[in-house]
Amino acid sequence: MKHLILVIAILTAAAQLQAQQPASCLELKKIRIDHHLLHQQGETQAELTFKARRCSVLQGPEKPDLAFASEPGISVQVREVTFIPVDDRSSGRAKEMRVSVRLVASPETLVGEHQLHGIMKYQIANSAGDVTPESLAISIPFKVAPPKSDKNEFVEGLKTTGLVLAEIAAAPVFLVFMMIWCPISGECPTC
Image 1 (cartoon, rainbow, N blue to C red):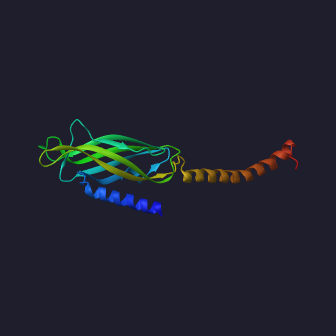
Image 2 (cartoon, rainbow, N blue to C red):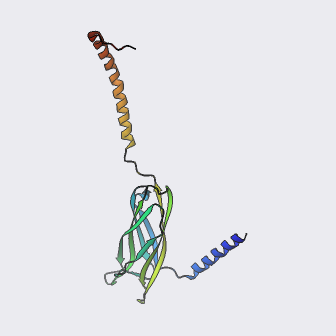
Image 3 (cartoon, helix red, strand yellow):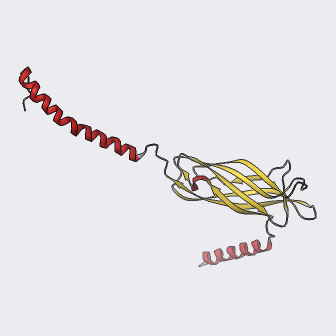
């Protein structure tokens, strides 16, 4: 009972703290993952699209920093960060940002649903021009599937069927050959 009360108290405090924090400038609007999943011993690209609300993201020399928590068997690498500027006169301010992330799974990665958690740190400018740092917690859901098979099962089945049919077709020819060869050579197999 003490543990239940403690958990409720922690959850209530976390909810109050979250309600007091102002909303982030950036919002993760879209996650696109190539082929919708990641295979064991494979890799895929994830494209994250962030949109700015009531502010602009700065695209200067200090690029946004995206760090992910380690996930067993998953390697994560940020490949590219691109910005869509407000307009030609925006001088380094953007309303949208896209981040390309490479995901690689080892053979030991568990098959099933996964969540990749990370923190994005970036700089924003409000309508008054004030520059402030912000951070945003993100979560990328994806599925890990068994490794891709290099063999095409249909083609393998056709090969096996062809071998069986060739053996069936060769049996009568062998019998006819033995029926002719035995009397001529005098060397007939005995059973």
